[in-house]
Structures are given as structure tokens and as C-alpha cells.
Length: 252
Ligand code: G
Ligand code: G
Ligand code: NA
Ligand code: MN
Image (cartoon, rainbow, N blue to C red):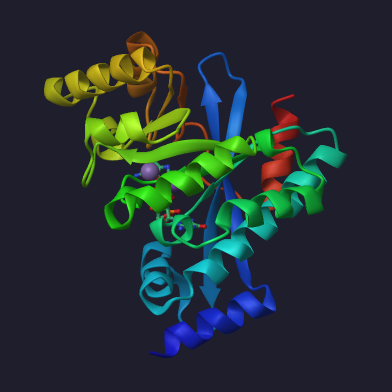
């Protein structure tokens, strides 16, 4: 497939970009930014991340993509810190990464190289990390949290989600998948699912972020349900680095 070779070359050439989408608390405080990859193919134009992430995953290119994203995101965090902007950044990692031997140590070394404190990095994982080799995954995650890196459980409520996973994964944040958030204001069942998820997370000592918040009514419902922070187009879509810097400055 031509796309795989093109992606490999784009990574080598530094042509894959990261955009950043804010996570904000209800008082307006910026809790963090999520790094999201963006690739504009020279002939095809924008390639949807889902598409090339699937290619990277099935071809073995994923570790390289993750290294690239971590390197770029940490470089950006260091730059922002030098400008007085102390905002934590979340990077999405795939189940494959969590099963790569030495992953936790490599992340710690990369943080040190950039002079970024581990608490300024968050890694977003999905429950799929436990499917392949739960023992190894648990070791890696323990290594990462031992270094002070924060873990977030992404897309909660979809896929192989189970309460057992919540107990086994050393995460400090849970993200409610946007499929539950989208119709929260008009669907009572979705509202109940979100309510129970928020209560469950809080009883386990986790922060809760709702994804895909697009309107004021949903924002208000989430605030009333006790959710901690939101992410979504209502606040901001993922923005290129320069625009993110301007957005952070405008927020004070
Ligand atoms: O950004 P959204 O536009 O389309 O992202 C689509 C999917 O791609 C989401 O599931 C998101 O978590 C995932 N994604 C975005 N950036 C990255 C990345 O850097 N690494 C991995 N593994 N997944 C990513
Ligand atoms: O799986 P992950 O949660 O990382 O997915 C993030 C995806 O959600 C990205 O594709 C991102 O562009 C998209 N996204 C971010 N905010 C919104 C939103 O408010 N509404 C919708 N529909 N998608 C969003
Ligand atoms: Na994510
Ligand atoms: Mn998600």
C-alpha cells in the first residue's frame, strides 16, 4: 500500500503535524491539552487520523509514530514552559506501545532530555491495552506512573469496557466517550449513563472529562452532574501550535 510508505516518509521528513485540543474545567481553568496527529498528504490532502493510525498499527509503524508524537509534543511543552505557559499535554498511545519492552523507561528518558517534569505529560490509553497481555501492560503502566506520568482512560464506555479494567488500571482520569455525551441533553438513558459514570469515577478517586461537548446545554448538564472538565468544539477544536499559543494567552 502506497499510503504506508508515504506515512513513513512523512514522519522522517517531519511532515506530520500535531494539533492541540484543550480540556477545560467549568471555572474556565485549562486543565490540559490533547495532542492529535494531523497529516496532509501531498496528493490526497488531509488523511483522517483513524485511517493512518490503523495503517500504522497493522504495519508495525506504530512505535515510530508514537515516538514522533511524544518527541514533538514534549518539544512543544518545553517551548511553552520557556514562555511561561505551564500546560500539561496528553498524548494518545496505542495498546501496542504499552506492550513494547522498555516503553516506560524510554518515555522517562525523553522527558528528562526535554527538561519536562513527568507531571506535565499525560498518556491516554484505551481499555484495549489489557486484551493482549494484561501482565505486561500492568507492568508498563506501573512503570510510567512510578515515574510520575499521569494516565488517562480514553473512550470509556465503548468496546471491551468493564469495571474490572478500572480497578486494574493505574489511571487518574477517565474520559467519557463522546457517543454518550452527544445526546446527553435530549436522551435520558445517556444522561443516566453519564451520571453513573461520573459517580463511579469519583468514588474511585478519578477525575472525569467529557469529550465531544458541542453546545451550552450539554455543558450545563455536565456541570450539574459534577463532571470535572470538558473537551469539545464548544470550547475549541484541535488547533495548530501557533493558534494554541494564542488561545492559551487569550485565556490568561
Ligand atoms: O483527531 P480525531 O480527529 O480525528 O482523532 C481520531 C482518532 O485518532 C481518535 O481516536 C484519536 O484518539 C486518535 N489519535 C489522534 N492522534 C493520535 C496519536 O497521536 N496517536 C494515537 N495512537 N492515536 C491518535
Ligand atoms: O478517541 P479520541 O477521543 O482521542 O477522539 C478524539 C476525536 O474527537 C478527534 O477526532 C477529534 O477531532 C474529535 N472531536 C473533538 N471534539 C469534538 C466535538 O466536540 N464533537 C465531535 N463530533 N468530535 C470531536
Ligand atoms: Na484521545
Ligand atoms: Mn476518546
